[in-house]
Amino acid sequence: MDHLSITDASFLHLETPETPMHVGSLMLFELPKGYRGDYYEDVKKVIGERMHLVTLFHRKLAQMPFELADPVWIEDDDIDLDYHVRHVTLRKPGTMEQLEQLVARLHSTLLDRSRPLWEVVVIDGLANGQIGYYTKAHHSGIDGKAGIELSKVLYDTTPEIRSVPPPHRSRRSGQYQLGVAELLQAALSNSVQQYAKLGRLLPSAAKALDAAGRVLAAQGAAGAQRSANLGLSAKTIFNVAITNQRSYSTMSLPLDDLKALGRRVGGTVNTIVMAMCSGALRRFLSARGELPDKSILAAVPVSLRSAGDNQMNNQVSVIRVDLATDIADPRERFKAIHASSESAKAVVSELKPVLGADMPMLGSPWLMTGLASLYARSSLPSRVPPLASVLISNVPGLPMTMYLAGAKMLHFYPVSIPYHGNAMNITVQSYAGLLEFGITACRRALSQDESHELLGHMRATLEEIRGFDSVAEAAPAAAAAAPAQPTPAARKRATPRAPAAARRAKPSPAKASRASAKTTARPTRRAAPTARARATP
Image 1 (tube, rainbow, N blue to C red):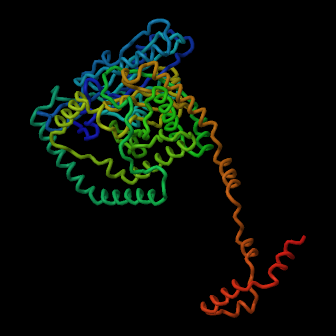
Image 2: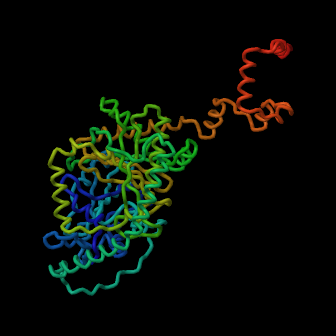
């Protein structure tokens, strides 16, 4: 068995019928030229041959008795592949809009917790002949980075389907579920181990907190225009309790162009994405008379995963970034967003040892589930000021083109999770030279048409950013506007040098004062002629 961390388990406990806690992807594949086979059967065959390489595919949950502790993962050696891998045909004419609506519906249903927590749907019927491929997996078993690692196992880098070694025959007792005593003993043992780890972590935690405090103090001393110690976010029309109905829309942009644009205007790809979202929200809310006076804050997941770590779990924290929607000037808004993002990442970097710690909690399943249910069924999401008004995530993806069952993957769009109080989630993911956008939202808060409208505003904001002066151009312009400062040598030449006798004579302050008074009372006769002489060409 494998124990879930408190982070992994929280995605189970916070799940409600209105908020399925699974993440997904929508991929578009191009079939090989002259293909005459059954692509659904080909996909199912590849998954069946490789599923033993991915722990997510062959493990399921075992709940603790009386929900005294978090559940554990156990092996499932009786997997119904026809249940997990399904097939759907779009009705004519088979447009991209129809595909997005289908994905929105597929994403709104809960996964069966008695089985391994994943599903795949192969979708044909698109007018352009491409194949849609929708996947979803519960967030308790995978985060964005782990999903990318899974893709490296499941997909190929060439059209040729690589062969993998078959699984070893399992030798089990045939017991379908673990016994009560065995589960309780495992929970107690795991809790003791986790508390021991926390004890050993305390010195490192103290150092991390001290370092993070120094970073915040340094940022304050530097006179940052936007505080890194953010308060509550402005309330918007998206900060409401949600239903399980979803809207979904997609967009692709060239990644290299965005990287070059970021370098030119003094930001990063992440800054450009945040600025696009900020500008789009300003336009969308302003058109409805709903733009708040206070700035909107975004909750942004950040990975805590170290290089080379491909575990199928969650190693993620969340920062808050000021979208500066209260700033009308797009250039100043861009600068404020970049400063806020970099400040938040600097603090999280120092707190990484603390944020990654597991903290067991007795009775956490029933406590967190009860609180989630209470929050969902009350009016709190609509009444309480939010910590963040929108969810925005940027996941580094695969840089190379991938293939599945011989078909070429053209697009790799993310599908994510809205929640009560945050009815919209904007996720971007890089793939093979593209930056793929996916907006997942509660359909009542953001309809399908409104989702496409928001994407239009994001494109318009991007064109606005393209019109910014480059960093290299802005610096000379600022220097030309500032008053010219003389060089040290020029200042030395411009300073009048006192006669040698005056330099040698150092009168007392009293004498200097009397001499100054006499000079003021009786100006010399030569002063005027000297002035006239200087004025004569």
